[in-house]
Image (tube, rainbow over all chains, first blue to last red; front, side, top):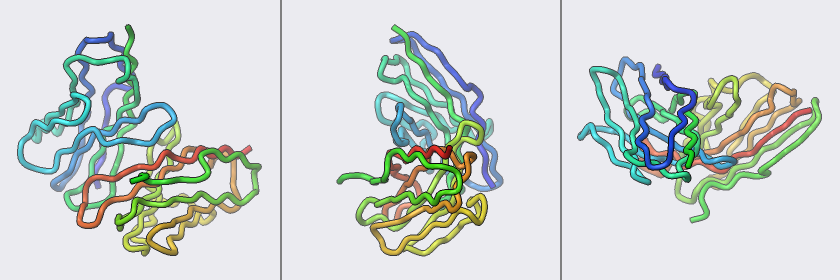
Length: 113
Length: 114
């Protein structure tokens, strides 16, 4: 089975500052890794995913993440955040070709002017 | 495409009542997932279907919960009888044919059991 730990429950950040959200995973098999965003009162939306290949993955809205197999990490970054990036962010993992997603507890990002 | 559709968006009921949550997946998607989100337990997978057949229901918390998918465009999650601890947001998600990765989530149903 796979599991995910998101190391920060809340991240306050000023507008136009960079942000990094940390995610570590545990698995005995090859994995797929995902970051989802949840805006208030909405469903989850995929930001980006790592399936294989290049370890640097670019997603929507200027986000990117780097897969580090030796560190079992998949940290999410954005060089300059906007007020509209205020949301909850979830890291998730599945076994390769496995449909079952395991989510982390989420990180709440609050962007202030 | 309209995306995954869930109804109702909000449901308030009293303990002991039957609750039915509905989901319409994206047309052409052959996997359907039901999740529950609570503050205490986060996002949990309850059950998922492939081509209308339940594949894994190991996340269903107890016998009070049941899920069906009578056809490719409709699924229900039923709680009978409901209890206050069932209060949560329930999400439905679907995945396209031939894909094992991206799940598309609906907006969720916020259930409150008094």
